[in-house]
Image (cartoon, rainbow, N blue to C red):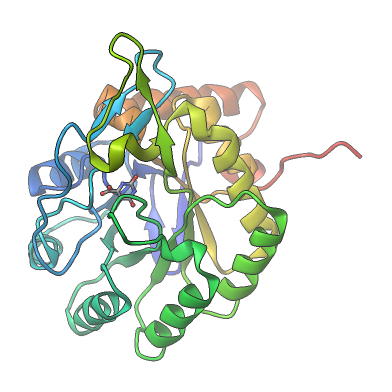
Length: 312
Ligand SMILES: O=C(O)c1[nH]c(=O)[nH]c(=O)c1Cl
């Protein structure tokens, strides 16, 4: 079964990888994702210039019905230099995505200059959608700011650059963000990040389940699948074909992976379910995906990608 994909001159022997933020903050976690036989790549925790402890705990919670997660981590990470050292020293044939999430346009531009000048050979994911830094809006919801930072970035940045987007919920917003993104030679778009600022209640204590922001946090897992598929499909339909799509959100079974590909995804990321199930999730998802493809008589993901049918 052909389960491969390409983004520019990077080849992926498997289409699954972690979502930034999950199993990717330390070198031990990054090594575990790379070591899995069933991952095609790894993405780092979004880096800020300096080390960040993140928000006070409890800041992550798994709903006891298994339907999702809520997090307000607050961008905890080891700092830009840690991840630069990791990717520079790493001997791997698998592509590495280096995620950055500066707290200002200038921080992102500075990190992009450092990445441009470094001998890092990989892909860069500009996170425009962290919902959990108090007082900091999600850039992806500010279309002018999004266009501005991409204009400044592409004035000097020549390595493969993609963006991690928040979910959109309005057809006109799909039109608007796609029109902006199509102005730039992006390698990929990764959609979606968690659905920002949800609220989960502990039924026994009538209390929110996470401490930061009075309990407001990003929602992931099964609960966000319909929104994730819509964003993958809407952007695939609108973006230039040379901008590849990474589908993220709501992946807990092989069928969910298949659905993301039907909507147009080239790679598929696993966040909440990886946090819940652990590294073995990748083997299970690939086996379940392969079963579906075999049953349908397909030999390659190319037979499926973007082939979602509508009712005519
Ligand atoms: O709170 C976080 O660290 C976080 N949490 C998310 O759900 N998405 C992000 O992009 C980030 Cl940066």
